[in-house]
Length: 178
Image (cartoon, rainbow, N blue to C red; front, side):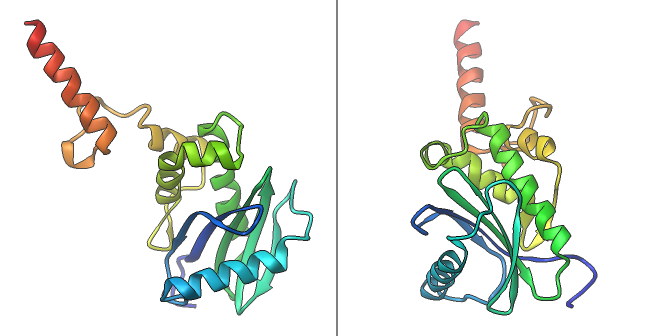
């Protein structure tokens, strides 16, 4: 193991046909897009017939451990090295699924994920950064993604584009009303 800190190799969200919805790779095990797509296809083919609707399933595949769960027409995968703790991977998977469910008001399906892809990608970024697990509490992740509970005076460099635009629009409206 590289260190005592658990590392995630990738997070995949695929549709019911194995096509990409949202993916993040954190290791160099799949350096090209072609190798990434090949991995996604092979893991989808290997797991598509399993019953992972309620609880997460664990599979040792291609010298990695992958935990996966199916929600509606989406397949969620979290992958770690073969000596990674499966319980940690399951915790990451569950927190990711729960945070997305909170953000999408429990309508976790392909259409709603695509319509809110910005929130889903921010969720991926809030759960794992560079392979390091940042957060595993779904409500905290959802609050960070929506910036609820944060101060209104967020530095411009830390704001998302939408937040910066809304802030500028609000300041312009205030200056025009004076």
